[in-house]
Length: 336
Image (cartoon, rainbow, N blue to C red; front, side, top):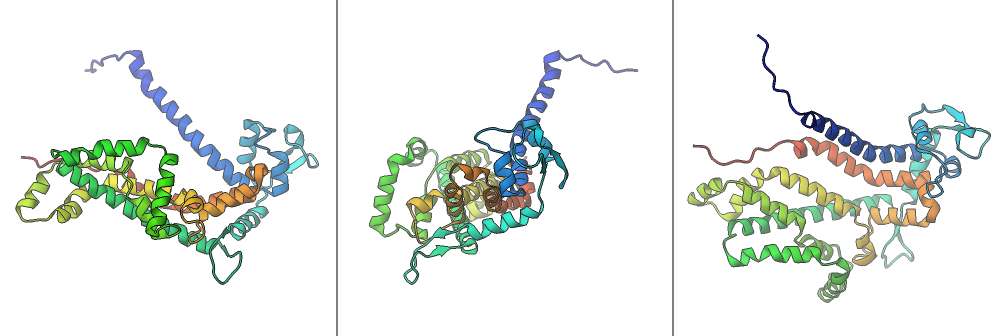
C-alpha cells in the first residue's frame, strides 16, 4: 500500500536548493582567488607582469580560468587577449615556481635592533620563529584570560560587579583603536614595556572582546550541575574550570584559539607601533616586500609566492585540527 505523501509548497522545496546554490557560489568566491594565487606564483615574472595586469584589467575571467586549469606546458594563442610575446604564451611555467619561492624566502627580511651590526636585518628563519612565538604566546594568554574572566562572570552573574563586565566589554569594543593608541603607547613606555615582546603580549592578551562574549555565552549555556557537584566534594574554582568547564567548552576553546592564532600571525602592525626593532616578524617582512614593489608588486609572482609561504602554516594548522573544530560537542545537563 503506497504511503500518502504530503505535498509540500513549492517555496519549501525550492528553498534548500537556493541555499545550496548560494553556498556553492560562496565557496567558489573563496577558492578562486586562492587557486589564482597558486597559478600566479608559478609563472615567470616577465610573462605574468606583461600579460596579467590586475589594475588595468587586461584579462577576462574566462581567460584567467582557462589559463589556471590548463595543463603545464600547454600554450594558447596570444590573440585571445594576452599581449606581448610571439603569440604563444606558456600557461604555467613550472620551472619558475622554485625560483619564485626561493626568491621570496631570500628577500623576506625586516630591520632589527643590533648593538653590534649597523643596519642589521632579520631573515626568514628568525622571522618565522618570532611570529610563531608571538602567535602562540598571544593565543594562550588571550584564550585563557578570556575563559577565566568569562567563567567568573558567568558563575557570579547575579553580583553587580560581574554584571558590569558586559557593558565595559561592549564599550571597549566600539571605541576606535586610534583613540586608545596614544594612551597605550604612553602606558607601555611608562612601564618599560615598549619594544618588548612580553609587554605587547600582556597589553594585547588581556583585552576583553569578542572572545569573552562567546565564552560567557558558552558557560551560561552549560549546565552547572557538574560544577556544583564538584564544589560539594571540595573542588576549587580552578579545578572546576580546568577539569569540567573547559572540556565541556572544548569546541569554543579550539575555534577561538585558532582565530586568535590567525589574528596574531597576520598582525604586521605591531612591528610598526609596539615592537619596531626588537621582534621583527614574518608578516611585517611580507608587508615590506609587497609594499616595496609598489603598484606592480601585486602583479609580481615572486611576491605572491611570498604571501602563500606566510599563509602555509595557517593552512596546515586548519587541516590538522579541522575535525576537532568542526566536530559536534553535546553540551547538556545531567539526566534523571
